[in-house]
Image 1: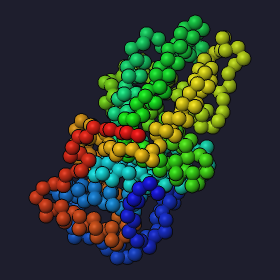
Image 2: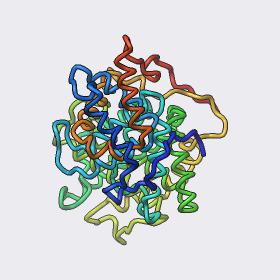
Image 3: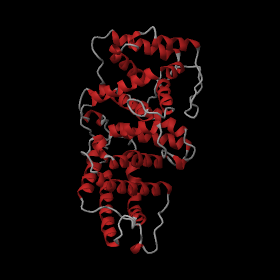
Image 4: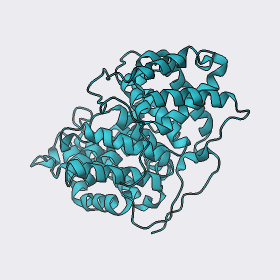
Length: 403
C-alpha cells in the first residue's frame, strides 16, 4: 500500500458492511463498557465536560476504524434531519475535518477508498453515487486542494459571472441560433481555461491530495484491472472540481452568487462532466449531422473539446494527479483556511451531539478495547490543564513541489 493503515482493534464481529444496517453484537464485556460510558463516566452526561468528550472523540476518530465505521453506518441509516442538518451529510464531513486537523487525513482516506471500491459492483459505477465515503473524500480534497481551487476555479467563476452572455446553448432556453453560437463560443473559452489551468497549476496539488488519488488508482486496479486512472479522473472532476464550480461560495472562493447567474456555472459544470464521462467511457457524444442548425450545441462542444483534451486529461492524471515516484514532501493547504481550527472545534461538537443522541446504536458495536479507550480518553482529557493542540493547524507552510 501507499501508506500506513489505521489500526483496527480486534473484535468478535465480522467485516461490517453498509448494506447490512444491523451490525452483529460484540462480546458482553463491550456492552458493559458502553454502559459505563454513559453512566459511570460523568463526562458524557455533563454539558460542562463537552470539550473533554469532543477531544476524546477526536482521538477515537483518528485511531479506530471500527468507531469511524460505526458512526458512518448509523448516520447513513438516518433520513430525518437534526439540529445540525442531515447526519448522512455532516457526520462523514466532520470525521474528515477532524482527521485532517490531527494529521490523520490520509489514513482516513485509505479507509474510505477501500470501503467505497469494495461496495462498487461494476467499473462504470465507480464514484458515481454520493455516499458517506465519497462525501468524506470530497471534503478532504477540498481542504487539501484549496490553493489549487483558488488558482483554477476562482478565475473561471469570476469570468463566467462577469460575461454578458447567458451561456444558454439549447433552443428551449435560447431561441436565437446566432445567440446560441455566441454563448457556445464563450462556454468553450471558459472550459479551455479550466482544463488548461489544471495542467498549469498541477504543482500546487499537495502530497496528501495526490496520495488520495494514487490510493484510489491502486485499489481500483486491484478489483477492476485497468480502471484505476479512470476512477482517479472521475473523482477529480466529478467529486472535486465540478461541485466547486457550481457552488464556489461554499468554500469562500467567491462571495454570494446571484441566482440568475448560477445557471451559467451549472451549464459549464454539466458540459465538463459530460466531457469526463465520455473520456472515462471511451465514447463520443452524438453530434447532429447538421451542427449549424442543431437545437443543442452541447454535444458538438463536448466532441470538439474531447478531441483536443482527451490526451491532456490522460497526461494530467498520469503525470500530475497521481503521486510521482520522486518529489519533495509538502503539507496540506488546510492551514490556509481562515479560522480553520475553530471550524474543526465546531465539527467535533456536532459529532459529540450525534454520538450522545445515538450512543445506544453506536457504542455497543465497538470492541471492549475501543470502549475502554474512549472512557480513558475522556478521563485523561479531564486531567489535563491545557487542551491538546492540533498538529496540522499549528503552522502555515507554503506548498512546494519539485520533480
